[in-house]
Length: 514
Ligand code: F6P
Picture 1 (cartoon, protein in one colour):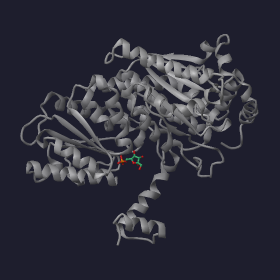
Picture 2 (cartoon, protein in one colour):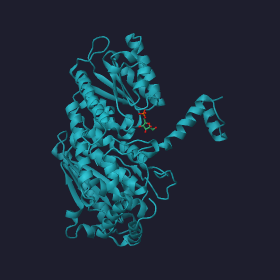
Picture 3 (spheres, protein in one colour):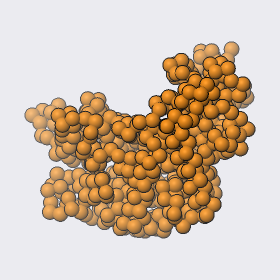
Picture 4 (cartoon, protein in one colour):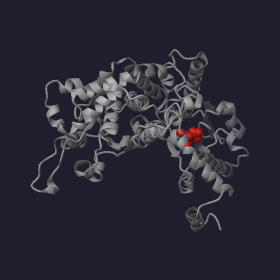
């Protein structure tokens, strides 16, 4: 973001006076709630409890304008090459709404893959897809890591209420204790291995796959397990998957222009789709598309992802917060935090700008958190009395058929009370009982945890991350930072290169080298 837009300088001067801002009195002011809360379908978002005066808010919106945000949103949605370091578009929104003004071949591919996904998942769910001994599928094992694991796993867990298909297990870590614990619990004859990898080269996934194939071979006496009906591949590199031995009819694919952490909407979501059924998966896509519409067409002042992003910029760049916490008051949303860590930190944890210069700005925040009420009995001490500024996203579900009135009331009241306590604080008789307050939070209330609402929530965060990347001038769609560690792992395993004394000693102690 060079040269510095005038709004940036203005916001810096407003930040110097931010200690005069009192959230509690802002919240009590006329029209505050109207101006700072928004609803979209089954999602209600209250942005009123922020350290943000109208002047700051206007300054942030002006900053977005000065950074050409409308143009960048248009670029994303129309399939322009926004991932410049890899020369690609970022077409995850087109997976949710393929009727976009996008290249015909991409659109056709999305419809073809959706059809394959529907047909295959229907067959698995209705029992007509059979293993080598003629048994229907009772267990699906999704092998994948990063974006080929976190999104589908999170969606499957979040939508447990809709899970009426086979059991679904997720294996990501190369830690053998996981796969060697899981497989003996399963009946190979009724197990389907779903290998998820965009590149079909990821070390962890390929080793877990090798172990799973050896298990199928032994248990079922199969010559070629990869070619059997116990194996399905999901990939952006179909040739590699075919070379591995998976028949084309058992492959689902997606295009290079869908990034790993944005791929839950693609055939990578297959295991979730098997769990909840295609109609529900489609509703999830429609929820994402509804958020896309809102994001593309709402003014910045009424735009949920844009406001969310701008508040994050305010805290990160002007008030020097280092992190934000995500606290869902719904145990089924436990894995949202893990997913958002990849989404946000792999997208914006960058020191380079899109045009390949060293960034001069403080980019991506640290994302952390866990579910409420559990977090209240752990890290909330720091949120209330610690010396770090940590804005919080509270996420609650208003109606939950899996709970009862008594539990649910207590759960939701806890959430609302925590936001209130952070804001109000309390003067104490002594230092131990002093709560400084004035601590900001957003509260999102979802009417029910449906596939549609889940789609909206996930797309909201994706767009938030994109807006921030535009303000910072980063490319949200590459991830060069993960390559060096992969390379060094390879070098050590191959015995290449010189190791420093510390590394050598650790490898020795761990029994890796002599
Ligand atoms: O190492 C990072 C990464 O490339 C992620 O971006 C990606 O989601 C993950 O690895 C898995 O990659 P793949 O789907 O190609 O196995």
